[in-house]
Length: 194
Image 1 (spheres, rainbow, N blue to C red):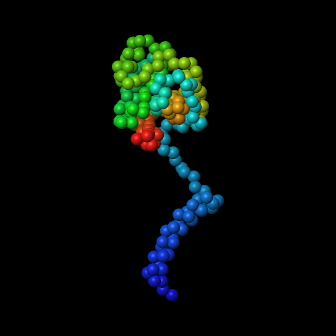
Image 2: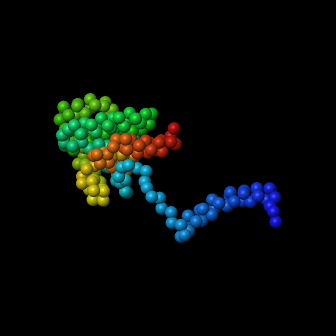
Image 3: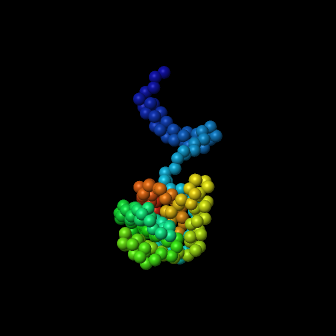
């Protein structure tokens, strides 16, 4: 028994529509346990996201790149702030949905504040943040440290427009990795607004 060209075409169309249904059935069954292996973010995911106290950070309603500055801003700190400036500039037209906020762990003198603001005029410098905000960030740091071996080594955070801290980065994080995570978040969060 030979098949005609029309029968082969009909069988091909039938297989084309049946194959996805079979694949879904297999994926939902116990025969094939599919688990995605990796993740796409470079920062440490804060799970569940922790909300910062409302009104404690300027620029609410925007994505925030939050940097907690140590008491004295040394060369590493200055380099970190320059990297934040570059990340903000690299955001391009989506940069209007992003703000850079520098929190000082201790009360900063005016000389230090003017030095930091001279690096980038669009920085939001908070010289004396509320203790509750610093305590919240310290709690996030403590929660991530044992699991990731970070030992209080987190200085940079990505915060969503509702003040939820969603990603945290070690002090030795590559600025390009932070930029990639941020671009992905900005792209997906502003896609329906454009």
